[in-house]
Length: 208
Image (cartoon, rainbow, N blue to C red; front, side, top):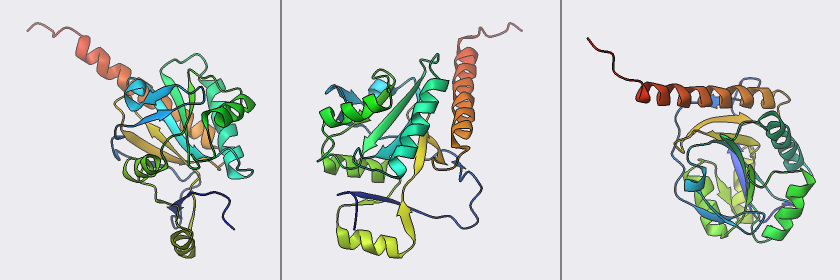
């Protein structure tokens, strides 16, 4: 029995590294306009200039989503003094996850509404965003979901890390116990890269 009206799935890698980290330059997050846990509109342009981490959850989940949310709570604590970092939890069950319901879920984790956004909206737009920007398969068809599961695909537990320009740069398995330290390192690297780029652009050209 499926526990959610939407099933987000991702393939298992053979001989995957312990933390299942994938890094590189994947895809720029396409424009989106969704609603957060305080019924405020949020677009990807609102996140430009910040490094942000995305996960995919639903509030009625009593298993992996709780672990993923606890990881975000720890990351929020670690980066409490860094305004250039944000966290975004996309609901994969937007029909159930109203802003009010997500607000209750957010309070459970002491989420800072200016740093950690729980987003909901049109299911079709969310599905397209997950598929096209984060490159994760998603289906609302039980038969299709069963086929994907039979091919040894599993419910996604990955976090996607997005740089200041809005491009996905890494994926990390959120269920691994060392995922928080791995994500922290990657986020700090992206912050340093952005700072170095800004400094090089603003530095005066040396005279010859």
